[in-house]
Length: 93
Image 1 (cartoon, rainbow, N blue to C red):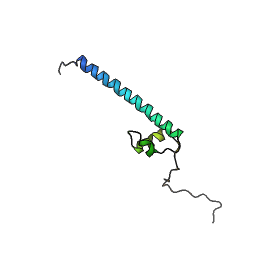
Image 2: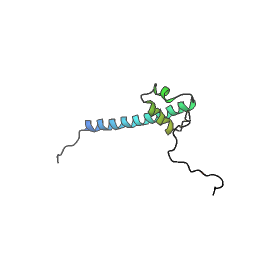
Image 3: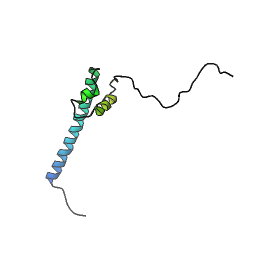
Image 4: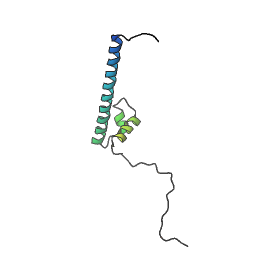
């Protein structure tokens, strides 16, 4: 094993990078919350329209909307593949 000790310049640079990454994370969280707030304030606004103003894809905007409980524009069209049990009245027999 070597007896290398990082210089103070390297330690300072690493600390600055860690601070910058923490700031980016904070700013990203704030931006995601602002996106959701705008989508809630403007119900007619779609994910593709919002994505045009952001560095993210339409799908990322949809994920943000789901994460922040933004009401959907339409009902989901996917249905369960499980067969529904039929419960009827009197049995014939």
